[in-house]
Length: 253
Image 1 (tube, rainbow, N blue to C red):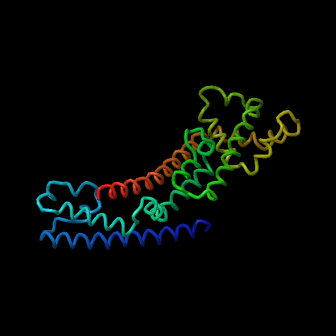
Image 2 (image 1 turned 90 degrees about the horizontal axis):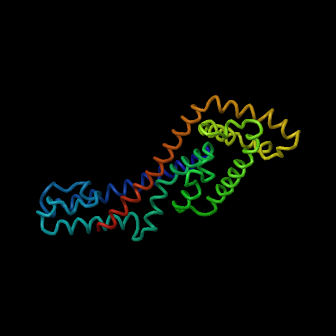
Image 3 (image 1 turned 180 degrees about the horizontal axis):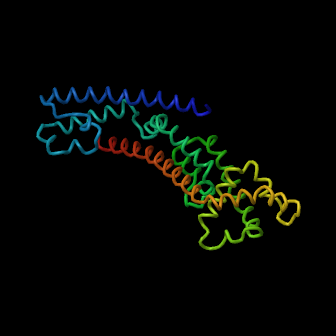
């Protein structure tokens, strides 16, 4: 229910933008076909960059120029005259899907938060142009997750040193995921003093069972992680492909 307003917002803008594109493309196709007394011009002609320079277009004198003019009018009418305005309009249609995918991955994938993959959630959100007020909570979360990673290592050296040896990468990753998923309950014990006997007892009673279960279920954790990463990457590429297409259309006018 928390994501429902975003989904409705996205549906509304998707409907408005695709309807506007459909109307403008239809009008341009009708005009071009009437102008050149043919039925060759179609939606692909308008929306596919470089189609205006195909040999079949060149057989119609000035058709390429007219096609680029119609494309220019379409892009400017719907998305505005600048790249910033165009990206802003596309964000309304595309960003909610990426936002939900990113939040879902952030709940499960600590490596995506702490930067150990070479990229992270905050850099993705900054690249998409989100305002700082929406990014700041994830910056805080990323810092907390990185601190929890460092806090967990001494405990593992004490109780499960085999997980830090070569060849146990999948098991260690599963442990980090399990701890991350249960971080609200487990964080006080992970961040406790490893030399305190009471803290050791609490860690043994509450965290070690989670660690051992994660090691046994490492393949299930890996399978879920791969699915989440693919889902998130597809959502990100979905945004980038639309932006690249719009930029290509604008540059071809």
